[in-house]
Image (cartoon, rainbow, N blue to C red):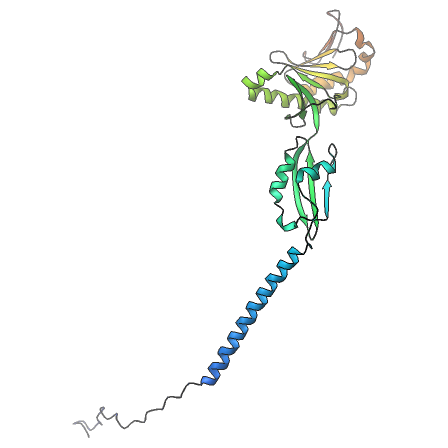
Length: 280
């Protein structure tokens, strides 16, 4: 049928051929599904098998501790550190709480720091940083003071006593003026470090460091117990002056009543309360 313009009508669509839809390939779908199921089951079996294999390995004792190696000891013995770690031979290396073991060992007053490490499959390494006693202080009881000026351990009957004694800072002063007392204690240890760097008048030549809040620091010599007055500051320069003449005055220490380093550029040596020697 033609319209008035001579074109075919657009309504004539009924004579077009319809394509027949292809049916699903159920056989292929079945095989793909079967392969997916088999793959999934295999993966589960592998994972489960690996889990049970690891579990059997853990429980077999293969990772049981056989060796505990202690490093960096000077004051302490290996047996003491092992006992404080509470690690037993045969303990599973994976079950060890390394942080807790470190804290247990650090309860020892001689231990500043302990680091624990697993070395697979059956070894544990413990690295210990020990405190170093630098002096002794009397606070109703005698205590060791370490290289950082920290009081860390009371002395026992068999403790070493060959350290300089810090006096003038008693328990009451620590209780009432803690920050000032701690600062003075650190300063006393710094003074010992300066003496240790000398070659003539060293830390081995003194038996006591007395801390006087008003007058400052006073050293006492091992030989003859002569007081060496340093004041509050400029220790390095003052000790350098004494270092230059100490060999000259050392034979006469028994007759001296004091050595005063508080006068600038001078060492004043006293005998019977009179100045007998002064040197710039």
